[in-house]
Length: 130
Image (tube, rainbow, N blue to C red; front, side):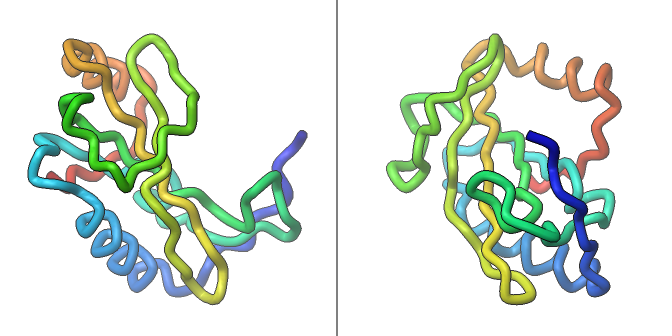
C-alpha cells in the first residue's frame, strides 16, 4: 500500500516543540539515550491526504536506549522486531486537529553501538533528546 500525499504543516517549529515536550514526558528516568528522527527533525511533519492504515498523519519516530526490563508499562509492545530493535507505541498526540502516534524504536540490550553505527550508515536526520 502506497502512502498517500502528505500535507506538511506550516507551523513546523511549533509542531516540533510540542512533539519534543510530548516525547520527553513519555521518557522514564530509565532511558539513558533517546533520539528523535524522521519528519519531525527534517521539519516535514504533517497529515496525509487520506487515511493510511491506522494513521492520519506522520508518526513521531523516536530511537530509545533502555534496559528491556525497565520499559514503562504504558508503552505498548507492537510485536514488531528486527535484529537490533523492538517497536513500541508510547501514545498519541493531537497536532493541528490530527492524531499522531509516537513509535518508540527500543534498541535491544547489547546492540547500542550497532544502533549508533546504523544511524550513521542510514544517514538518518536525528536530534538527541536525552
